Structure formats: structure tokens, C-alpha cells
Length: 534
Image 1 (tube, rainbow, N blue to C red):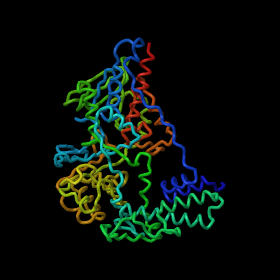
Image 2 (spheres, rainbow, N blue to C red; image 1 turned 60 degrees about the horizontal axis):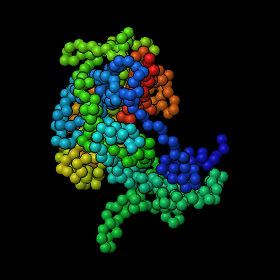
Image 3 (tube, helix red, strand yellow; image 1 turned 90 degrees about the vertical axis):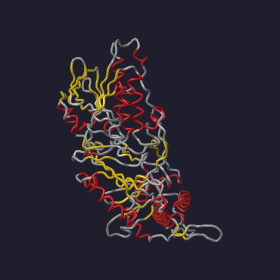
Image 4 (cartoon, rainbow, N blue to C red; image 1 turned 30 degrees about the vertical axis):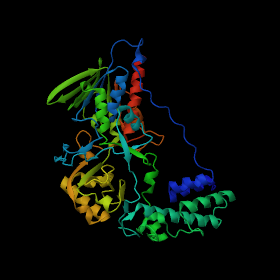
């Protein structure tokens, strides 16, 4: 295959990251065009049915998480009678904010009661909202106050284990970025100056690229990276003749072999780029607002669904409340129960649907919150929000984005998934805490072990009614990338009068946005079906 300007940029993105690649593309006129904005969802209105359909129309919704509550909220706008059945005694499902008084018995049989100080919390589930997600639109519509969420922070650390250069060292993000981008820019500048890219770039391209690289990498006049104030100071600049002391850079070979830039691509992700938002007081504030809008007369908490069947009159759902079996029949049902749990219901779903549900694989993820009585990360490390990253089982340490400069705060001592979270799943809370503190101290030092006043942990695989953090599709992974598995596609269509919804049936798996878009699609299709009925 011929080596073209575009293939060169693709390879540049692989080695130097999206920031370097996109900047270089812009400098030589190859930046991608902005994609067209998709049409916004328009909620159906009650007037849509006037003169078309006789009588009232009812929908029973299984699950009071994001998809279920969104479905109920939008259907009510069109005049449907909705009933939401939620097994928990709270709204939100996997969107769960842990605060003082939270009590939970997990599937290991251990009961925890949260004793955080008043006003302090952490989100065991969703914690951040990208600007492009419709979650923000619902916050605006429902009156949920938002605040900034620090997704990245130059003062947090990267610390990776192993025997390669720079291993087991806590390096600030600002230093790691300065050195990585600096040396990548130097190498590309050298390649350009030595004619290695003459078959790829024109003279004008090379001049534009050189100018960009000098700025991007903070290169010297002769095209070398010799350090930068971007990586920080051992002594901060002050007044008069106090110019401060810049921290010397690591060597090029150490930076390349050490891989200290391995996590930089995270912030280039479409759904992870700053600025990000989060509700004041906890993510679950969104779902209490949904609850208020829908009305408690239309929501039944503590309702454990035991059966779901298509019947001649519509859909009958059996459930248990306080040990008593109840039943409800509605014209339609929207099932938002996690797919791996649906097959446990007494149902008359066809075998191909049950096989499709089996293809949705439950995932492992969890968090542990530690309340410190002293905000050492702010006073000693100047860390305000963001996260430190590691290849240890804790994966990352997330610092609070609220109560800045107060006397205490809740640090998320790990947010891990996959095999790393599986290392925590079978442990007691005390064991999880000990492991998290030990690994965190390897990154932040002995101060990480002191001034601890309380803690609370959760594992979604070991949480009743969830038993998964999100679903990954066999053969597809966490995103579909423009392609869908046959099983995924099958569940997009109703089974008689039963519809399925949830983030697992979207292209934003594990995001509230995915749950909302899935609910919106189902509401649209159901409403169109009813409206077409003479």
C-alpha cells in the first residue's frame, strides 16, 4: 500500500497519541470535518393520539433505573398510564450515590452501613456526564443543578509497576505529558528535517508541521526537547529574582520504555474529554427528580418482579411486595431489567430471545470510598479533583470534586473493572479496604494510610438486582462501532407487546446517555404503533 499523507497521520496517532496527530493534521490542512449534528429526540405528545385511537393506554415498566424512569416520564407526556415496578427502595438502579445512612447487604451476605459525614458522598455508579450527552438535557428539564467534574488533573500521579525505567515512581501527569509530548515532537521534527517524510509531505507541509511541533513539544530553537516549565517546579517561582527551579526531564529512552504516557488517550475519548459535569449532591439527584415528575402514585418500590408474559389482553407481570404476590396487566411492557436476569423470570419468551439475552455478558466493576478527616491531597499535593492512575488492582484513585478546602472529603480509593475488580469481589469490606490502602500508599505515600474516619465499598457483580456493572455483547465488546451482533439486533424489536430497553441496547454502553437513548427509541416505536391502531 502506498505511503500517503493520511496513512502517515494514522501511524502518527498510534505512536504519539491523538493530540499530536490531530494537531499535526490541522497544521497541514488534514483535520477532519465536523460531523453533522443528529436530530434531537422529540417526545410524543398526547395530541398525537386524538382522533386516532380510542380509550386509554397503559404501560408497565420493569425497573426504575435510568431507562425505566425515562420511559415512564416520556410516555406520561403522551397521556399513557404508566406503572413502574422497582425492586429497590430507591430510584436510579445502578446510578447510586453512597451517603450517610446508606445500608446494603451484598450477595456475599455482608451488610455495610455508611457513616460519612453529613453532605459527603461518592457515586458508586455513574459519576460524570460528558457535555454531548442528553443526560445534561434531562438535568436542565428536570431542574437538576450541575457542577464541574474534574476528569483530569495535572497534579495527580501515574505510577506503574514492573522492571522497566521509571517503574514504581509517582510521576505527575504534567511531568509525564511534558516529557512524552516533548520527545515525540523532537523525534518527528528530526525525521522531518532529515528528509524522512519528503515523499509524504510537501515543503509547505513540513514548514507548518515544524512550527506546530515546536509549540506542541516546547522544543528548543534547534528542535530538541531539553525540558519545560510545563512539567513543574521543585521550587515555585516567586517575587523579585525568585525564578523558581524547573524539574529536570527524564531521559528520552526512559520515557519511551517506561510507557508513562499509556493513559493519556483516555482524555481524548469522545465521552471523556473535559469539560465534564455532575449533579450537585450526587448523581442520584437526577432520578429523584424523575420520581417527583412521574409521581409516587405511579411507582412501586420494593416490587420484585417474578414473572412477565404476553397474554391476549396485553402483558401480565407478577411481582412480590413485602412477601405478598401481586399482578398487573397492561397493554404493553417495557423491560429494563438487566438482560442476564430476565431469564430467571417466569416468562413465555421464545427460545431465540432467551439465547439473545444470554449473549449479553455481565461485567465486573466496583468502587471503594474512604472518608478522610484531612484533605491532604489538597494541602500537600495541590490536587483538586481528577484521578491518579496505576496498573495495580485499584486502577485509579479519584479525588473529590466537591467541598474544596473543607476539613474532610471522600476519596474513591479504587475504581476498577474486569480482572482487577474481580480481585476485590470475593473479599470482605475490611479486606478490600486494607488492599486499597496498601496499593494507594505505594502511589501517594504514608499519608494515604492516616486520618481515615469511615469507608464504604460496592461490587456490582455482588449487588442484588444488578449482578453486573454493564453488559458487553459477545463478539462485539463494549461498543458496536457501526456494527451490531444478531443477538443485539433481535432485542431491538418487541416480542409481541414486550419491549426491551437499557444502555446495553445502545451505542453508549455503561452511560446514562445510552439508557436514555434506548428509552427514547422504545417510546417512539411504541407510540407510533399505538397511533397507527385504528
